[in-house]
Amino acid sequence: MELVEPLVSDLIEDVYAKYVRSLKNGAMLMKTLGFLVALLAATLPMQIKAEPMLLSLNAEQLRDLELDSIPPWPDEIVLSGTNKHWQKVLHKGEFVVTIYEAMPALLDVSEPYPYDEYVQVLEGEVTLTPIDGEEQTYRVGDSFTVPKGWMGTWHMPVKFREMIVVETRAWVASEE
Image (cartoon, rainbow, N blue to C red; front, side):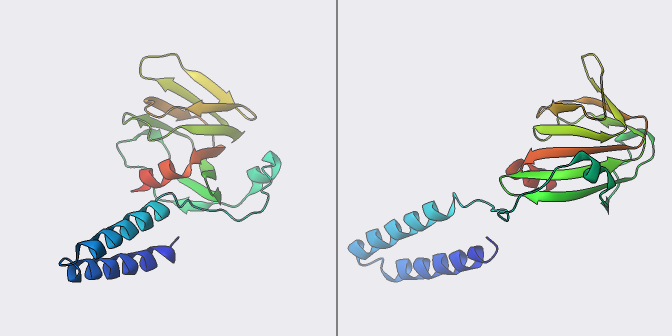
């Protein structure tokens, strides 16, 4: 997609230049605008394509996988504990598969959760307490979903590792 965007941009600039030159010719104008609309329609549905290879999600192997350090949470989010965490993106196609690990911490999720997230606990445990609800604890082997818009606290009393699955567009939008 990175190679396509400059080509499309150049093509659009070229079409626009022809459009400006052809303002006196109504027929050419309609052809150019039709082509531009068709070009834009063809490029909008382009989607990220992952490599066509199988990805094993063996929990034992994922527990031992080396992860990359990521920037700390903003201080106001960490109510207590250690503000250190790591992750590794394993797959990025229509959805993102990531392994995430954090040291023990209590996090305040007072901003609505940015996307729907599927979680499988690989190590440790986590207790989620919605703002107006009952706490729920998940341990190794448990799976759950965090819905978009969820708010509350995310408590990891011990080192915690999870596999998460999120739609790519939502993941990318949350990083902006």
